[in-house]
Length: 370
Image 1 (tube, rainbow, N blue to C red):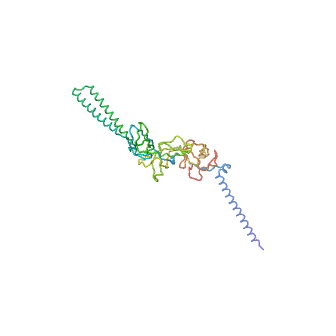
Image 2 (cartoon, rainbow, N blue to C red):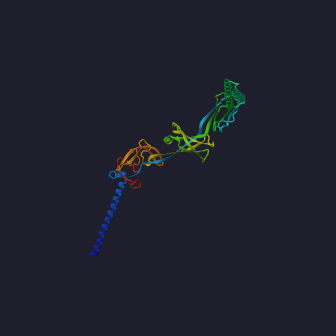
Image 3 (cartoon, rainbow, N blue to C red):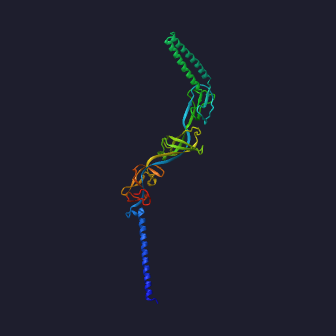
């Protein structure tokens, strides 16, 4: 049998166990309430019904330098065309070049029979020597009073005419040779040995290759990122590992209906004349400029018609603000209209945010502490 003392001890232990159980239950309940409250506050969809501020992170709109690389494939092309026409009537003696040949400045393209024009130069030179000597004699005689001013003037006129005839004869003789005006590639040849082409007929079409152009086909969505004068690097399939420096000198004014690209002409010095039309390659154009920008993650509907950000005012309320965006680069979006420098823009937490919601700023990050 259990005596009265032992019974009292059992009852005391049971009371202690009951009290400890109640205390433990209370601790668990308090912890659960705290956790639930925390979860409610940190979830926008649950914080709003409770009137709690919605936690967000913000960054100010700042003026910064945006860097963008615009890449496009393309093909080398002559920088300009040169058309050579025949200037004299003579039989073609030789044509030492073919279509596709690369020629140096001054290279012989076609030689005409120059015997007639060489003879004309010799005759004009002899006549000029005679008129020049005659003019000197008239001047000497005038000094002695044996020649009149009229006779001297006649001698001077004859000498001037003889000089002009010599210049014309020498020019005609030079035209019996057709030479390249600059380093170029022969694109067309309309003259052959044995022919007697008429004056003004087409002889050659040359493509000037110093400088040479890389015609890069840039996608239409980059049309706002390309401008005259921007620098670029060009690599080619013909010269692996070699980078050619160039500058944009021309931009097509229309977009190709099929490829949805537009041509950008990059001028490359090509002083060593290694590059010729037809070589394919890839261009990297460097675009950079100062602009007001915000993190791209803060922009809602960035490629649609209604790009929007949330701006936090001094009373910690978020307001939806329509913006007009520009360049997107380095994780930043250029703001052309809709924001002022320094305004706080929501970068995290805007997915469930509504206009005029009260917000709790930057509780989980070091940004823009107030």
